[in-house]
Image 1 (cartoon, one colour):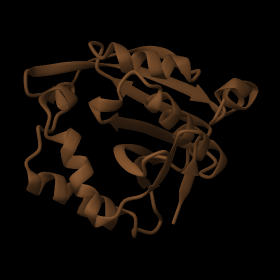
Image 2 (cartoon, one colour):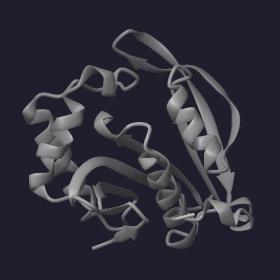
Image 3 (tube, helix red, strand yellow):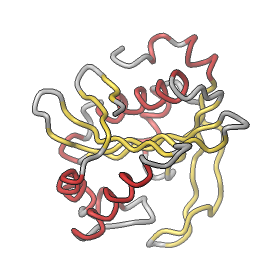
Image 4 (cartoon, one colour):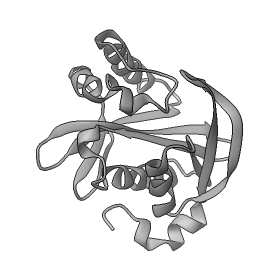
Length: 187
């Protein structure tokens, strides 16, 4: 079991009962408005958790999805994901989603730091990137705050409910992360 520890949260592997926490946020339109999925019904939330658990057993493992747990309450409040996109090029991607009851509290920032650190320290990546909808100002701010550079804009790259969507691309390189001690988890 992988455990990534931050100051206010920790990230742990998913368990089947976590579908309830997933459903608490994934069933809300405002949470998934920039996503190609959702809002989820209960079966979709259960299916997500089951798939994450199956993916955790794959060898070699390339997908790491973690439940975000608030330390003070032990409540599951979101999910963070790290995907190895190329072992040859040592490239990975992060993503995160947080229950809206916790928006604006730095949870996404702390999660993103933990995921990037995991990618560089544990998975030996050279480059880690993330994408977000240009309308998702909060996510763009998180990625900039953790030291990622906006590389560009992919046009009409994802089909979502309201049509084709552009994506901003952000990235950080291993040497940039190591030089930026302020981006370490807990900092």
